[in-house]
Image (cartoon, rainbow, N blue to C red; front, side, top):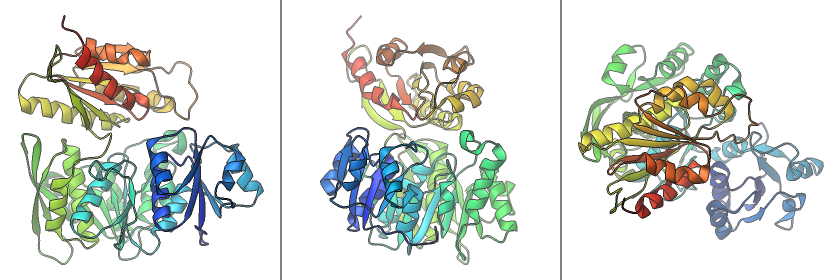
Length: 490
């Protein structure tokens, strides 16, 4: 957008969402009058009210005047909020500018050194790692994250420093609103085809994002991901400064991309992964940094290398960044520990919750879970309760979902969570369950309320249980834990 947006009085439709609530917190910290609406009360809504926002439950045109005045701008999500929403209609009739969250976030980042993190998978975890690392380095960054940091319990912050860290969401091409100084691409794999239509259109949005980098800035790409690396190669041809990160093997495969961060050691030690990364910053001698990750999985090691390199590029001390990564406790709904059964027939069972909703994410999390139980050596199995997300995604990736879920010992598959989509004839969870490897125990459970009992039926003492998906499945994690704890002796 070319003209400055008046942010003195801002009304946000869907204010309780993870993205909207974050920018609302920053607006309040900056002294703006913030109003909004959502379909239901929630913890984020209550937190915003405590900070001074006025929030209505339910949508009505009268909500635009919650503060006693009409807002100077209305913020919406074009994907999640229908065009006939009464507040949108009323704003248009009153001549009030209506913008997307990405437009608002772009305005909030003006004047800051902007660190934007993009990619099909891993955006929230990598952004969160970068934030925690920069905080440890004393930079006090402003940030807007798609999930809540476990340690801070928040998804956004108006910092005193000069750096602003945020996720760059590609799902509707909104990442093209930003002008990063440092842009990270964790990986690229076809997704959101309901919006882009073709693989080529999806890949192109990342090339266009790289072209948004400000003069003198850097594109940071994962060398272990072929499509991200190819994006980096094309960017170099267009004269963009590119640095790669990843394993030594990946760096050797892509010699045309200068390796800015190379993982030289990763060793599992109980619940930790001792990691060494060699930083190779332009114009500086190589420097080794060491840290201990408490979040499992090879994908998390790669994410930490990206956070280290990006943090160093915006001016942080690498040794202090490493201290922050050692203290990183994760993000809510990213392999988040719910609880453990201490007694009874399911003694030793641990329940985790994860947001994974794409086959690659599902495979990465289940691989991390498998590595965890194997390293413990007690014969535990991996049990997953999975809720497919979107009919379009389920139809497009049914085979890939089945292959990923076959990494578990037992699967309970729920009905598809359609979110914004209407049902598609012939597209049900069965197109996944019918393809899962016969060595995996599979239960199709259409009754959401019965899922805890079904999970208990396929679980054994000591197992690791995961609830997984982007929809309402997260509500089942505590219910499953209670079911396992309260199960009577046989």
